[in-house]
Length: 320
Image (cartoon, rainbow, N blue to C red; front, side):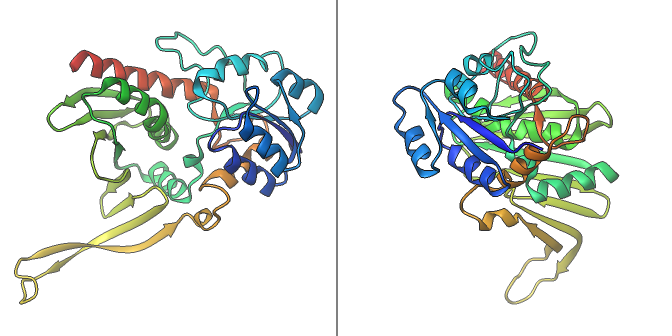
């Protein structure tokens, strides 16, 4: 079990991680960030922890058993290089290492104790959906939303790596190794679509990414007799029958209404100190042991996710 942790970076979600780490019993050994970072110094003061001017000093003087890496994407690989010779557990903020377009391998793939912090893996509705898909399969549809316009390729690329990357990771987490087939891009409809081919089950569903749509991300699992709908990702609703409402004075058309039989809310939402999933993620990081099944995302898994984003970006560039 890991008892303490050092913090590198003071990004927007650093405070959520810190609150979750404290809640599961981590001792904070110190923090460092870019020179002159007011935010890092503020966090050091707030949590009464030592402030270090460099990563090297944090590593050699804090004697931490593990580290949270929460820096900008442009700095991530250079920071990770500082840890490359150390066999210490790392929890790394998204999109994580190896965001190198066209790279043939992950330079950190041998780091079995390095994990990328995809907190949505730890949402209770996602856990429920995974258990049901694992047990009985079904057809699963992922609908992801990006606010940028499809015509702005630079914004689209950034959005895919910073936002959709969470969703692509969820596909991998829910169904295992997969590939896409029959890519389609509609400029007029502002959406990307592809079939999802599971290495274990074959064709299992589809991915649709909508650009500029006033909608919410959703995941829907359909199979004979029941539907599981996760929308938003903090809530799951199960339907197992249809009620037919005949025309009446109030409603003059026949209506078919799915009947829900239960739902599950993300209980961590009630704690505003950290976002959903952060608490369970911190707990699993603290207790993680080599060889034990984990929901934590390895750097190798994350590399496959980033390569998938690369393929989508390449397809879009070749089409628009």
